[in-house]
Length: 134
Image (tube, rainbow, N blue to C red; front, top):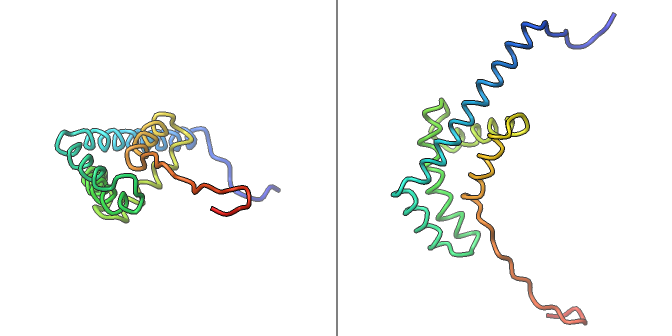
């Protein structure tokens, strides 16, 4: 006698796969809507202003860019049934990440979103002489 989880019937597998596909498609649409929201002229201006104020300082980015972008994202995810707050955004992010491995479009869109939220930061290293001092 085998122990463990019971095997799914073919019908149950199809239903399960259809549900995953449906949720993956919703994640795809939500990510597209977020990216479209970021690209609205008034939002481009807000994000550019926040980036200019932050410069290349990661702390200032967190203080200026993230709150602006977070508010924009929250307005979108609320339409997809997530709470309109930070916890809703965390849950949305978890859902999206869970579909990245299964859906290359979700992975690409989430990568585009991350590149907007986390632009490359140049790190300067102090000069170190041969004796280990700076």
